[in-house]
Image (cartoon, rainbow, N blue to C red; front, side, top):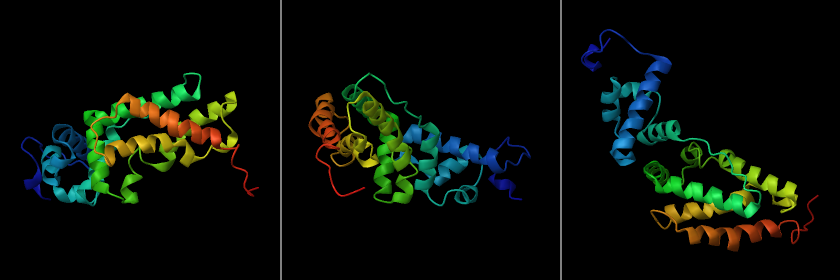
Length: 209
């Protein structure tokens, strides 16, 4: 037993399993909220959690994996809006995403995405970037539009569904914008998303069965 790693006042309590993991994640969350991902270090997290770095590395192999796990503690699921029409729903979803990505929490997400680069094994762990999770709300919106007769069933494709939010994400990730003006959101919806959705099933008559 290595008592030297215990902070003063920790007594003889030795946390294991879920209890220790929770303490590490909470420490990582607090560090990122204070200093962003850039300020997250295994040393700081170990000190704050009252453990040692080996305990962290046994669970998360590197700083990015720990940062993503901590971010997942902060992220909340977004319920798809139901304004009564497709354009209104898509605009509201984009505005929600824009507000999130423009927030302090969104700044942490952008740091994590930048650090992950194109590494899909990391990106897919981010709630907003996971293919299935990201597509689910958008497919719900499109499904309602199909039921209302606003779109063809052929529009119900994950890549089609998420086109608008991918374009918005590019404003942050590729252009480095701190936030996207509302007219950019309207342009994405009116000039790209709605024409794409409405074109499915009318101009798409391939040989697929």
